[in-house]
Image (cartoon, rainbow, N blue to C red):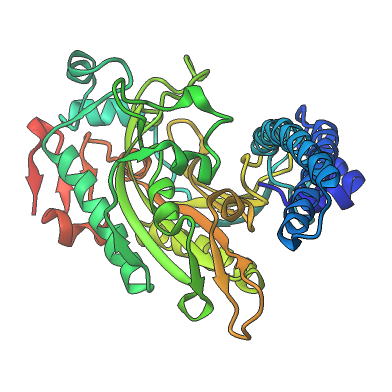
Length: 428
């Protein structure tokens, strides 16, 4: 959520920054409702002050009968008017909050202007893209090896749910453990949160109310399946004021994640890239405003370290103003190479939200100098999306005979070096 004072005092600047997002965002209704709300607030305070003055007059015992009668009548009228003003004030406050919740974060100054992903800026690349003769898609390789069972996934649930079988299940678990162990060595404290969250959590991290239709909600409870571990982990400290000495807080968390992906029908629906249920290890940081840029860069490097450990070619991309997420002020996408598609595909988004989420979730800290409590900066990123890492390994480590070599970093977790094509045999 944007600072209302920033909107009030710098309306032209805020409008110009929102225009960079190429969306239909306007703060004019916010400015108008804010003015009405402040007027109602001032009127309510004046009426309350007058009622207190009248009450104090009665306590003096020096009022004439006629004067007391007049003051009683005025007090009664003031109360009726104050109740009406309070009702209007409350309505305007609720309307103002809903308007604020619908406005995205302002892009950082270093974020390039642009309309969509075509205007994103490649920052760096890593790794060597191996020449693979007639590379096969991950879903072809995985099906032949008995790793993916797409048909039974549909039978058990519906389309875009997949059953991982045999070495597929072990691959997924091995990747999860590699990621969690690696991040723990970098100082991240592991969390295993609930995979059901309440509405306040999703509002706090910015998924609601903007993207209401994208998530799975329980029929009989006001609970949602988590779309990302960012939601429960960020909300661990909702409505709390932490001591600055506790910062930065670094958490990593594995969760299954659930998204309807509304509007994406027909896009990447074949294979294991875009699923309604998928596993992911998430990195979340809580820090001071002064350190957020540095912590964002470090988090991005921590996510990149997993790709490098797996020797998967990737690139870092700085998202443009038209492609950046609703809550983010700056975002790097890490994109891994898929030989069969002949292009890089997103496997992690590492975002700096500034104090945007903290204002929504009431996340503050007490400065060491004893000053007024300030809003925390939140940062997160996938470290990594496990299913996409598995798909990338199958394509980048495929062999001509249909087998798949296990990356060295995963051998201790898998116990094998090669998954052979014939009946998915393994070689130690």
